[in-house]
Length: 270
Image (cartoon, rainbow, N blue to C red; front, side, top):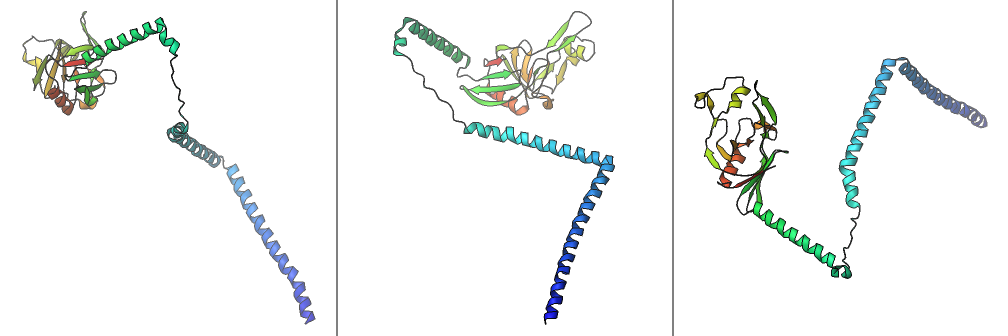
């Protein structure tokens, strides 16, 4: 029994030694594999360059996504968390008694009254339309309330010049106008510049080639000097400065404006 115990005890260190050696060999194998992989990558310049570029692209995309999230979501959220500073406005009673203060306040009150009368004159109860030629948008008002808005097209500011001294600048006039005429199923009477633009000879005033049907939409409103608010067959250009001076609208907006405005309704163009 003692011999068996001794032999068993003597064998135990050998088993532990074998386990340790096997673990060490495994670590060495992993290390060798890593070193071999590193040497292969280092020797393969194309693969190494690809990996570097790939990592650069990944980092760039991650940075772009972070910046996008930061400025779109985090910055507004942080701004909302900041307390809004408030200040109380107080007027010194001694200041109220000064003649210069009274004089200045009276002047301001008169200016406010004058501007209010002017504003009421521009924005009467009658329906009117405002046309913004910078953004190419219109705003239709009725009873001083905005009832419709949308895109339009205005003058392109293109210069057309003939061989002589005659030339045209295609711009929409700006200022205060009014509706001078309303027409359904309008016919376009082509002016001289339309033939010059197409490289055609200018016909007589009553020539049939002057009249073109179906290009102005179902309605037209005249604001004078040949300028119209009308429809268009080039709806994809709405919102752009592409016209020869008239204001173009899509069919639905044109119908609403035609039915809302009447002869004498104001048109403000800026």
